[in-house]
Length: 196
Image (cartoon, rainbow, N blue to C red):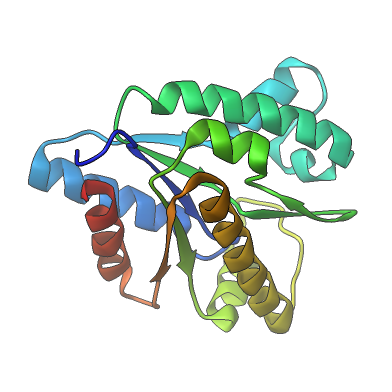
């Protein structure tokens, strides 16, 4: 590695195909370089903390918790992720903004971003209409409905949030387009960012 930072934060709004891009990139790195990449998920970490504290019963309840409780759990999750990310090349899979009943909660506030010290924040983006279509066909999750224009605005706001993380931590910010049917192309860009 060319620097001591070995964590890349990968974000994208629900339905953008972020998990598929991440998994494909990790497979590429394993095949081409023989290296394992640790995938850490802030949402999973938050879920496990909130579940252990008896605050929720399922993952979709996270965004419905009072924002003060979400912030508390988020801080604990950020600290846990930062410790895990120090030992290996890692991807932190998260959202830059979480839609709550009281507006958007910043997914990477200072108390999460600073401990992690990412080298890069990657935004996975896709066409807003394609995201709406993917969300409507996903039967595995209970997602809030958003109009195509709302999805576009959500992605624009995520860009601003990612730049804020870069400002706080010195990380670079990269946008990778996940075009319909071209997931390998997006994954290749992510793999290059991880191996830089």
